[in-house]
Length: 156
Image 1 (cartoon, rainbow, N blue to C red):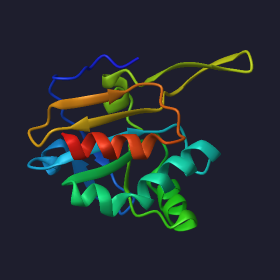
Image 2: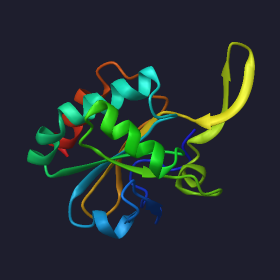
Image 3: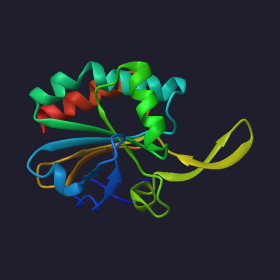
């Protein structure tokens, strides 16, 4: 469960992008941002979520909001995910131990079919132009999520 809540300053971060560059909190300054954390590239729910955000990217841009998807997958896996599904949302790799997902508390214990393991807890953050958390969606259900986030970005 996220240890950061609405009104908190979003933590500083630097993450690798699929093109070998980086994205940092400072890169987001002056515009709203949506950072969505998802478990794994090319899995059904994660693919649907990334495609939903991609489909609404122009609407997010009209609302002055940048989109960034984050998982622990490598930059190479992100490249393949983007190419396979024609994604236009930016992705970043948070593979570093004690990285952003650990800091936020969205990397944690999960259970599936009686098995316990560590994994990304699907979560989304809407940030203000000055890097404060406007809204948190913990334990996201994919269906309709991108639309709900867009409405929040429009009204923020």
